[in-house]
Image 1: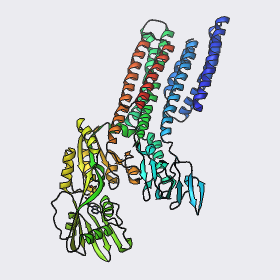
Image 2: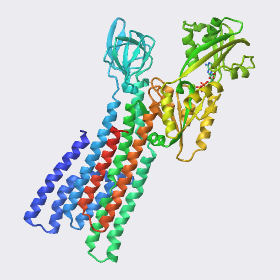
Image 3: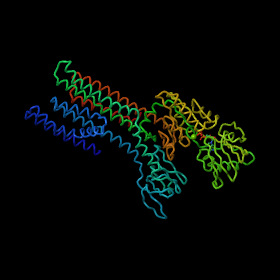
Image 4: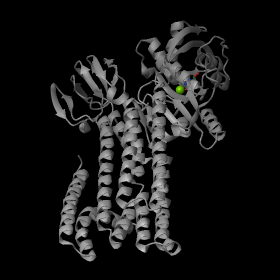
Length: 618
Ligand code: ADP
Ligand code: MG
């Protein structure tokens, strides 16, 4: 229980005791109207003090007062017309409502905090032959740490000795532990399950995965969604309108209708109470927080509640091919040298790609298998979407696709087989090509089927050639394909799609975040895969899939839809109930107490609906 909740509980308890005492006393002693008002002010003040304080703070800050104003006017008015008991009761129930609000909000926050409780507490630093326990914050890159089974990994590191298994569930939602050994990267926040590992620190604590993820989830609530804005705007207009209706009831109606003046005042005050939108106001942020929280359990990070709402409006999903739909791990199919051996051609290519992070480069190095002497490579320039240039053993080497060859005016052998050809030219002479191909990710198909069944369109963008693009698209049933795109063409293409949409139809781009940062940033919603270890993805994207599994998008969409559904249900229900209650109050069928009890019931139902959604997204 939080401090606020306890404090509120004490206030309410004291208020109830005083209220009952005063009531009993007033019945026995038979006070006159003035005296009765005075004694009932006692429990009232105990209950209402905090509300008055916060109202006062809002007014000095020139902020528009919220529902506190409604209840204050209503109860003060009730005292004036001699409805003392009801004034106190109304304030009492209002405070009970506030407490329920407080409890459910703190419970929601707690369940998210539990998820993000992935902070490592200490690290075992290896110094000389000794081991020292230090704070993760004190580790520097290059230092060696020792990881024992059961411990949380303190910083992102690379294993240098030992093998073991690592549980990444807290970060990625992946149930299956990963086997790691020398050369593998391990990420902070994950847990070492078995094996003693030695690892070299590759990132400072503050730049490591756990801290980044925590930051993102904590900040997520700052980016408000349209629905939240709607709720804010709604109270802004709603409160004055309700006050106006109430005043009309109090001041104007008694002149038009017959009846007691005090009776109309009382009805006006009940309208104020009945109109109080408190329940609605809590349930909306709660639903969004809940959505973000349950998504994170599936390894899907929303960077803001706005993206939950936007995701439900996406009707076109645009995918990057390499590394997103496909594994991004190329296998060498064929080496076709010209005037050198296969081995020599592969070596040239691998040396040229020695420093590149492109999936093609990584795969070629893998295929080559041997260690490379990076000292032989100099003067590298990257041509994104084409390939690269490097000076290997003093010779100028161009490595890339046919477009690169054309651009440099180099002769090359056209390739017709399905696969991506990596052409190599040495000192202006063609040296042959390496045909590579990439496998479609296993779970991509599942996602595509799911999207197509729901009538959502799918598009593929790729820098790769037409033949490969068509083959992949055909296998996955993707409707439109744009191949041989430069990185900037991809941005343009996304802009085109976004322009041709209606206001509330959104375009999502899904990429692996490695060379797609500009597109991820530009799309209505950028979804990056492989949040583990990829800084670019964490920065540029709006939604991050911690694991390289496109099908996680299904969970993301389901949760987003469930959240929005519960928000809408809550809004309709709450507003509907308010309208009915106001009408009944106007007609004189509701007492002030009943109005506030009804409001509490609405709030409870709304909160339960939000909680339900959190537990059972679908
Ligand atoms: P994708 O859209 O498929 O992710 P990129 O924009 O990263 O592709 O690259 C487009 C094309 O440019 C690749 O298919 C490849 O032909 C060529 N290319 C880019 N970088 C390299 C590289 N380092 N080595 C060889 N070819 C490259
Ligand atoms: Mg790519």
